[in-house]
Image 1 (cartoon, rainbow, N blue to C red):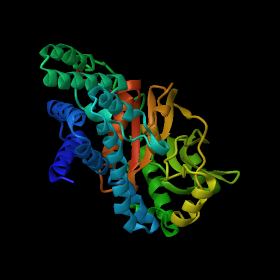
Image 2 (cartoon, rainbow, N blue to C red; image 1 turned 90 degrees about the vertical axis):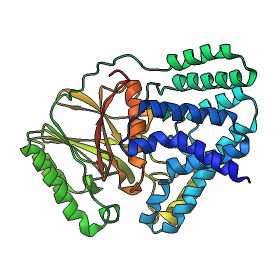
Image 3 (cartoon, helix red, strand yellow; image 1 turned 45 degrees about the vertical axis):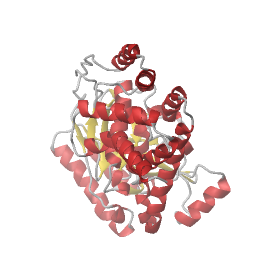
Image 4 (spheres, rainbow, N blue to C red; image 1 turned 30 degrees about the vertical axis):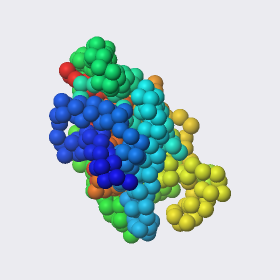
Length: 410
């Protein structure tokens, strides 16, 4: 192992990850992020496999160091660094395989193809979004065009065929969004989006349930006083099986005479558990069950005997959540809203045939302090742009926002 390989790998990974941290720091510079993105792709195409091994390792750490943070709430704090290293090694292997071939074209196609790899259903590693805050679009074909443009530039410099700069620049231009979307940024009616501040250490303690329920009811009453037509509360903001608590249901039904209420809570049915959204309106309620579950968080994507063992060891024997078969659309005030719970809002499946608006609810308290809410927002922005869906996001601790489709020139 050479120190230069480690340094170059860290430098390349930093360029490749800079867009996340700049956004986290609320720094916006389209030109700088474009340069960082193009340079990181150039380096990935040209570095040797040892340097790319460290590039992948540091990318895995910089993007996903926060994943293991949830282990502390199950009493396994000591596992956090091991989870971080595991993610680093997984992406180190990806990038090492990219660098194994000296064929620049093959490297380019492998880099494009990484966007399609979702191990165990985990879909948060999407290199195509590194240009999300620039003039360059983030659809897969646009990322592919940019990568091929950089391949042509590498070939031009190696073979001194400077004529290749013309198709390279043309491809980058083709991948850019210069049109004005002219998207209507008015919501259909007055919506209160609540961000709660419930510490994850306290959220699921039975002694705190009464206070948390009161906090939620108070937030709803404040929205009524404010003249809102809809109030949105975060994922599992009622940390219990709402359908097993008729007193809470009756209170929410009564309040729904004055305001529509969408809130997160657990749901049980026929011995199965669901992560769900509840919509209360006009003294009635409907339930939307989560479709896309978090791998190793809400279910174990392994054979039954292994998943049972892992649940017993790490999660006190709690059974996996059950996924719904298809997304749910709620009709509120005459407008359709696609329901999405946390991880779902960054899944393309939820945007297919979606209406104009999506309500997303999250509990980001599992992963703070970290860049997790920022990466979530950038992924949501990516799908919002592609599908033209406005995402109204309510979260616990961090991430509450309204994300409109946008393109440069908007």
